[in-house]
Length: 267
Image (tube, rainbow, N blue to C red; front, side):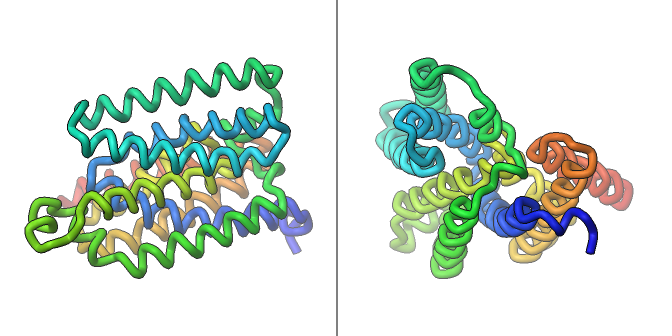
């Protein structure tokens, strides 16, 4: 058996990474089609407020991140829907407010430390058994929600006006998309890190779109690309002793460049 599979922390990292690799593009494809790509980055940064609160209160940081991220997703979508401010402005307001709150809470908690950097950039050695159980449980819920609401989410994502004309509550399904994204972002923090999770949700989807195939085929291809990126990234980060989050994202970007060059020449 290879050395990498003899350590419990690596087995946990591979299990969590595989779950994440499926969830990220499944949510990401709806975010990309809805042009919500920057929303993922915003929610990831806001989730740091929950991490900081968890550290300050000496509780479970991912639990705090989950509460704050979901609350922010609901707040952003409600503010966007109210037409009080433009959509991009709503995202920006929450982004700045979340980051400011995170900085204040971190200063109260004693500043930056190794634990915080693990949530910022991801670390394969910090995935605990509790993290794995949380990722698996919420991952199943996310996939079940997508399976049950697939047609509605697809319809709303591609043509919101037509969806409303056909009686669908577009606002409710938009809210479902951003809440699922918020949950997926928190689940990805131990592996990829808050600063890079947006890339894992978007890059595999954009790469799959280069093949110009159907929506379902694009979804399947993006999952395959995401799995390759995560698993190869974890292996490289272990043997090269480098950050797992950055390695995973660089791998995904490398696949994008390769596919873009191949499909570009074909077109």
